[in-house]
Length: 399
Image 1 (tube, helix red, strand yellow):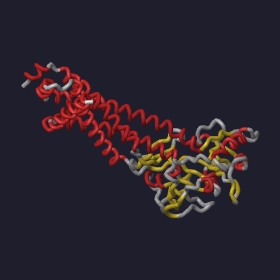
Image 2 (cartoon, one colour; image 1 turned 90 degrees about the horizontal axis):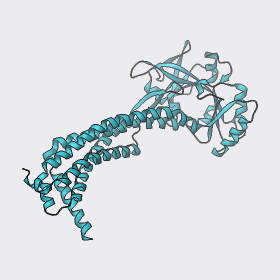
Image 3 (cartoon, helix red, strand yellow; image 1 turned 90 degrees about the vertical axis):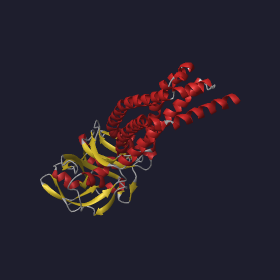
Image 4 (cartoon, helix red, strand yellow; image 1 turned 180 degrees about the horizontal axis):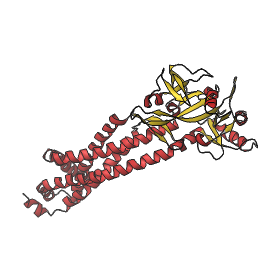
């Protein structure tokens, strides 16, 4: 028992002396800590974009809601359904009902150009045409400013994300739809989902403006329960009147987020990896400097009976501690700089903008700390091994 305790005491003593010598190496130490902090800041910051985008998309989905598109369509943009088809879908088994009828919403989806507030360049913003039944399905819809549009009038309400990111979407302003100016009469929220990036109006007036007849592009149906999805899907698949594709709303929005999330995540790790290479060299330089300035001290400790293993572990602990300090600083910088920052980006499935907020989650912070720890361990390993292999006699002769 005395052996392991003695070994731990040796590690503690060497580590203490190493930490006390940091002021003599403050330049190299500061460079290493800042380099690692930069890696973590960039990694967490970029990944927070993907986390925020995915949150905005997945917050839109509900397991007891299904979306129906034309068979073969991968988004609402390329789908098309007739009025008769939307009625058949709404009357299918598994769809929840209320006193007003089936809780299904036939919707129209078009893209309009609206300038971004930040750059002034035009962006593709979704304009969704809905009917009264929509609010039995989109039950998280809530007007927070102004009022609801009047049915049958060329008026719109705007999602809070769209109002924040795009110019001319304030209550009282107007937007150009077709050849006419439509007033913005209200702003709404939708539980942070993708609907907050959209502009909504009545389906009838939108059909007339774009000469769509009595057609729609999707149906969103509130089901009796999440377990009723299979019954609903099978009923539509076996109905000869329909040629449609059915998905859970949650699955639909997860698929819509995958391409952008994968792209951002890959880019984030690539940038962080390239920066991490530089940070590793910084850590190597710092720890080699530590070994060089403490050669006589290490030789003396070895002569007094301190083991080579204790020297290696102690130097690795010192390197890891510096790395974790850098990781904590980087994580804090990323949180305060990026968390909650609002922006918008292209959803490549619908070629429309999605407004969202960066999300620095505990998982991302932990990932950043792990990266910092890996950099510290790699940066400390070779200097530690060099210190342990120093000949004791030669080390004692160092000035």
